[in-house]
Image 1: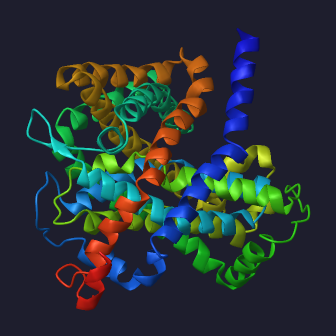
Image 2: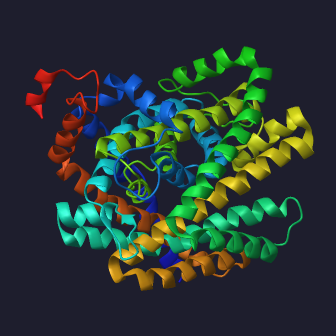
Image 3: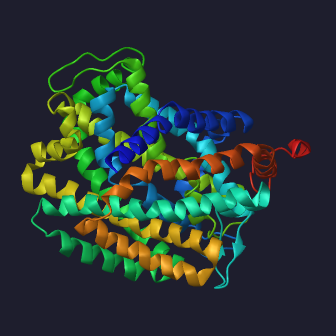
Length: 459
């Protein structure tokens, strides 16, 4: 058994090396070129239509508001890794890893935009009258049913160990303040159960309040630390750009890193952070009220900006401006943000902010990915079976808290790759369709006021 698990670990390590980087980063570059680098060309308009219309009422058909759909998707992408994953990338890849994280996010905007547009176009109403969609629908209808089935089955199974590992993060965090594992498991399962049994409307109502609160709480604490070390900000930014293209020498607890290592860790951090190309976000966005797929797809770009360019960058600046990245060894990198907060605010307040933020981040993630899993089960076997899988996911919370399915963790990355590959095949093959929807929106004055009538010929 041990040899088998070692083999699985080697296979997953290889897949999540260069192959997955080529698929996801290459896919992002491909879509950016195909869409005319629209994320730059229309940036002011995209910001206005998302950040500027958070509380605006949307027109069109759907189950939840555009902002609720975005916060539901954000609840999945903003997790504990935004706090602990970034310092790990810096610890192993050096400050230059952040530059590559930014680059992946910029190209990832095109992927996220494309996925969400397809999710809206191919969505449908289920037996309960709610809009549902995602890769399982657009792959099946737009390319081949087998791709939709592979995606749905792979994600439905992958989420069992994924939820368990998320629970482990909560348990370990709660242990630092003396809360027993089983008590944490019961509380998390109860909260998740109460929310998800209310369906997408209740999930949306919870996440639209929880996500801004938890992000702002952490952001305010981080900004206080950055402002305290404001003179170090130019130095930190300089290190990010310098070591993206030159090796970073060893210093203190930092062992040093070459350019290739900085790229590897930065790209991986960016990919895991915003989930562009994974196909999960369209599942939440498919329920949104909107008058055109491209309008809702701009909220996918909003997610990348908030998750990677704001939250992850804030964590990076906390780690770099305080100098903690040179003091703590790589093996303890996950503790860097907490130590930075404690250094300024004391063990109780500083550590409490980070601990509470991680608890909220992970809790919101579990709530949304349980919903994602239900939608896969519903697609494959109907709404009744989706209720069965909901119970299985709740049970996996308990198992994650008390232990017992650790061997499944070995399959996590392979299962994740198994859903990304069919999704990316579908997105790339539907490039022409995606470009047409994008042009239809940005060349029509009804949707994009600055459009010129003569440009409609390019639709």
